[in-house]
Length: 169
Image 1 (cartoon, rainbow, N blue to C red):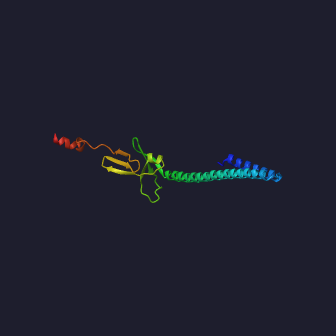
Image 2 (cartoon, rainbow, N blue to C red):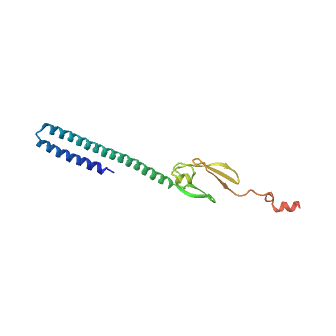
Image 3 (cartoon, rainbow, N blue to C red):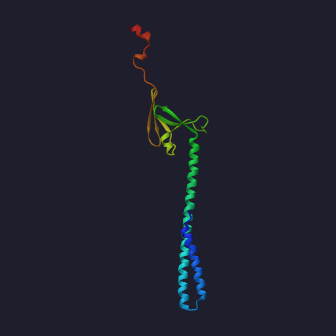
């Protein structure tokens, strides 16, 4: 915001300078003219300082506006990027953002960390362990590890069918 006080001070100083200049025209005495000249120079210097301060404040505001405009563009881009994903529960209590079907744009299907995405960052969930009954994913950003059970392994009795058990008895 432009510094109103600085602008007001500059205008007041300019008016005072004009008043002094008019008074100088009326003076005939050399020492009185010299005194008024010094006072006039002081007021002109004060007006220049106020004008410089107002210019500096305006330049700072222009720079801040530029930064905010860049931030707005960045937030809009991030919002558009998040629109390509949907929140998916991979296991009870474990959610991630999964790439929507049709939003691939040349990318393979993947998931990103929901916690990192809520902080404006995109980090992929990488499969860290894989097995027939358990998978583990790790976030490349925050390092969180998430385990997903894919079922329970069969017990020893489940390995055999009923007919085999009847023959053994």
